[in-house]
Image 1: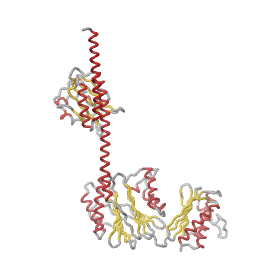
Image 2 (image 1 turned 180 degrees about the vertical axis):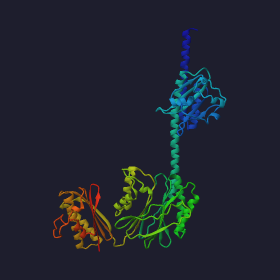
Image 3 (image 1 turned 90 degrees about the vertical axis):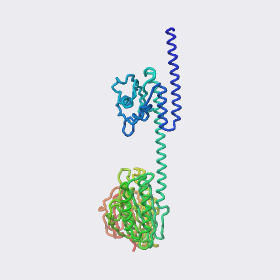
Image 4 (image 1 turned 90 degrees about the horizontal axis):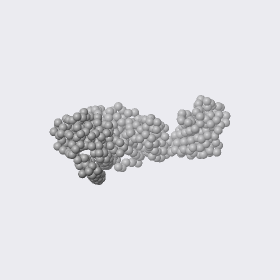
Amino acid sequence: MSKNTKSTNKQLTEAHQTIQNLSKLLKVAEIIVSATNIDNLLEVIMRMAEEIMNAETSSLTLIDEKTGDLQFVVVRGEAGKTIKSKSIKLGQGICGWAAKTGECLIINDPYNDPRFDSSFDKTSGFKTRSYLCMPLKTFDGSIIGTVQVLNKRKGKFTKKDSEIFAHFCNLSAIAIRNQKLINSRNEQQQIQADLDYARSIQQNFLPKKIPHTKDYHFDSFYLSAKAVGGDFYDIVPLKNNKMAVYIADVSGKGIPAALFMSKMSSNLRFLLENEKNQLTVMEKINNQILERSSRGMFITLLLLVIELKTGKIKVFNAGHISPLIIGIENVNVFKRSENPPVGIINGIDFKTQEFTIKPAERIVLVTDGLTDIKDEKNKVLGIDGLKNIIEKHRASDDFKGDFLKEIDKHLKATGQPDDITMISILRSPLPDYCFEQEEIITFTDADHTKKIKDIISKMARKVGFNAKDINLIIVAVLEALSNVVKYTYEQEVGKIKVSVLGEGKILKIFLRDYGKKVDEEKIVSRNLEDIRPGGLGVHFMKEIMDSVEYLPVKDGNELRLIKKAK
């Protein structure tokens, strides 16, 4: 046979082999796509690797995301049982070196290669004659593991073998990554389904219907930081015309906290409905948590027991944020007794406190999810910030709605770190009680003065002032406006916000300008005979009003005028 004929036959053989290999790669792609789970996929990959490379056996390693080591996940042949449990550091051994460098290794004399670890052969009884190791690279170049085929049945591994093997491994790497993503998505979906189910259980333990009475309006809001949370609350009618209101926060978040919360919520309601003494309720719930909590969980708990006829309230506070009392004139935080949370110390002698909610007063109970939220400057709201928000909206007809809009601004800016729960308890005002607010933004010129006078007159009449007093109040307000023009806007027309509040027998007028800062001491008083606008000063306003107060505000000044009707 001539040399040309031999050469042609060799080329034909190689071409035929290439076509066969390409066909096998297409088959690999089809099989890989049809694999339904990661275990089946890996087994298919290794079986096809041996077939394509005509090798005796094979193995596959993947990088452990936690340790960063290579872990054998598939080892074909008898050696599988002894080798599969082993892990390899990156850079260690042949596959460790390939994973670290990203390069293919063709080794046809492994026992003379310093990177070869013969201990695997000694352990398994297998004899390695040749070794082809390829890193598994995804489309973005990330290395997720290695595939190695051992002992080519005929001849040695060649560069052409490595080229075919590289295509195979690239397909395999993409398939493995995709299957992992699918598995991860399925796991997340299952976790979400579990969370949703747990949430539905939890929701069953929160009050579905808030009770109301003739003289009290109860309202609530709850938002968990995760699908399920550890906050819980309830409003429980008691015997003898009493109402129990509690709010609580389980340490921790997620499913464990929610399940613990569900159990304790049920127990607490049962105890409140069946125990006459609420101190006994606190003691029993404390003991139950100590006995049943294996995770060291505890609960901050605030319990109020309200005598509906008198408004007297007993307070049982176990390490929780104190109630905020919204009165006619201000917002106060009720001083907290020094009781620890329930579930920490055995045999606690719980201290109780008392106060009375008056008509038109509101009590707000919250969890620390509200006080812990941050503003756009990453500053924690805190109890003072919470008080400021409540003060801003306490006269609103939709207190809960306006309050939550303000809170939502913070949540959109910085997110929600913890569960948020709020309970509002409003005692109805007496029949002749005025609780209203009007607000306008206008200008300090004469054309807008009438509008200001009208809303003040209207509110003053509702509060109970006579015509003479109303005229004096208007004089004081006009004097204040004149001072704004003279000292803040320096005789120019400027914008001003006028807020008029009627609370019981008290009239409040807030004047907010947007001019330069004013020193109150410079607004001097003159003789009362001098009625020229802007000349009477603070002294005259104080003679008419019960309280005149300048407050520092951003970009301007605020003057607060307060007077109580007789």
